[in-house]
Image (tube, rainbow, N blue to C red):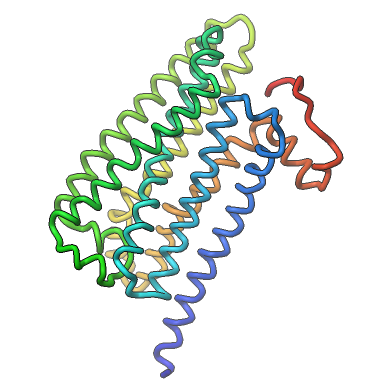
Length: 308
C-alpha cells in the first residue's frame, strides 16, 4: 500500500472510531434509563414513562442502524441489495417513529393538565400500547412504499446485486423524491400542529389554574423541549442544503463537513431523550442516580412516591 493511501485510510478509521465511540456512549446512557424502567414496576402503569421509554428504545435502534450503515460504507463498499434494503427499511421506520412519539407525548401532557379527570381513561396503559403499535404501522407504510417503488421500476435481479448502501443509491429516483416530499410534509405538519396546539392549551390552563401551576409550567416546558427535539430531528432533511453551502465555501474540507453534518443530524440528537426528558423527571432521575451510584439493589422506590 503506497503512502498516498495512508492518510485516507487513517481518516476513515478515525471517523468510524468516533461514530462507533459516540454510538456506544449514547447507547449506554440511554440503556441506563431503559434498565431503570424495566427494573421498577412503578413505571409500568404510567403512560408518560411508557411513551418515554419507547422513544429511548427507538433511539437506540435508530442509532445502531445509523452507525452500522456509516461503518459499512467504508468497510463493505458494495453490500447485497437485499441486506441493504432491510437496514434502510428499519432505519426509515425508526426515523418516522420519533416525531410521532413526540406528538403522542405532547398529547399525553395536554390531557393530563387540561383534562385530568379524563386522563386515566384516555391514556390508559392498554391504549398507550395500541398507540405505539399504530405508530409502528403508520411508520412502516412510507418505508415499504420505497421498496415497492424499487420493485415496480427495477427487475427482481437487482436484489441479488450489490451497491453502496445508503438511501440515495437505492431510493434515488424522482418517485422516491416525490414520496419523501409528500409524506414527510404531511407527517411533520401534523406533528408541528399537535405541538403548537398542546403548548397553547397548556399555557392557557397554566394561566387559569389557581393550583398546581408548577405541573402546568413543567408540562409547557416539556412540550417546548419536544419542539426543539423535533427541530434537531429535522436536520436530516436540510443536511443536503447545509452540505452544499459549506462545501462551496470550504471544498478542501469535504470529508470533515460531511462527517460533522452526519453526527449532528443522525447521532447527537439521539442523546436528547435522556437529557431533555429523563434528567428533568425527578422520579426517573432518582432511580437512575441510584443505579449509577451502585445503590440500585439497596434502595427501592415505593409505589406511593410523589409523582414529579
